[in-house]
Length: 250
Image (cartoon, rainbow, N blue to C red; front, side):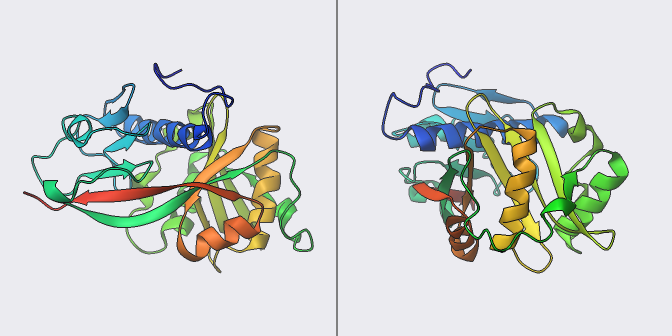
């Protein structure tokens, strides 16, 4: 457990957001470690010692009221490009060479809820766990399309006990997927994709598959735009805002 971060949901009103942020930082740590990048958990911030893999932040705040200095001192700002996940949308980094890349909402779903659209259940049985390097490569290519980033997800990721890569197949081909990572109190859902666009049907099958991985645990994640609306329609609730800041230089 991270020192200074309570995982007792009765402690404060923003525990849902704090648990989601901590879970997300664990996932970021996993991806950094699998790329050979050391990182550190502190009471206020998780941070990578050098630039994180593409699409992953260099730091994640873990509580309200973290100072800009506490975050900036923890990351490498020698070149532009560093990013920070401002988990409570309460940092102002505009005077430090950063701009807001996007804003989003943490989402939370209680265990045992029925799908937001129980009529759209076709395809649920086609979700399964990715179990070998060849399947992961296929999954990553479906996730990436032709953007050239499919090597982000490395085969040793499948050895992580608390990580589950999930795929939906149609006619033998992967058409949707997601990653679940388990912390002590919640399961985080990230990298949700569908070739035809994420829908309530996508979530219906995904939620059934995740339940086999971590039954009885709340689900968390973050979304924005149209994907946020779909998640809310699928039984999640928004529990707090976050911002992603990107460093553009002095």
